[in-house]
Length: 126
Image 1 (cartoon, rainbow, N blue to C red):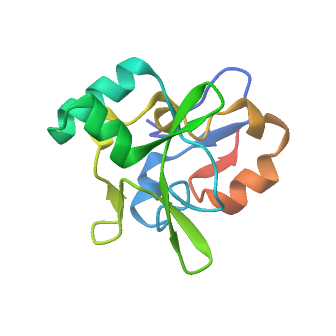
Image 2: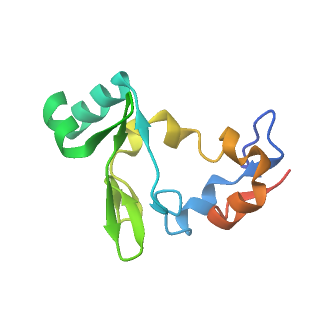
């Protein structure tokens, strides 16, 4: 029985056990957007024990008509505000946004598998 995940329309598989060794490359690296919707904002704020408005002021910024989680610059890299270096993991894993839950199966990577393989050691050809 394989622990590798497949998804229809994608030419690769994902082995989530690789997350334990990869230094959270999907949570660090180039700057980007981690979009959250209203329901995700409420869930994360509740999980963090914060009022929605306080949570939004501390951890989000407006990107067009969407909200995105802030990042911290560390040396030449950027880290999601919820990435914990000490544990090499996500502080809000249980309520992480859908964008995070669906990685690495993003439409962007359908035609950029070689780029994805450089970022994610859990990705392999199907």
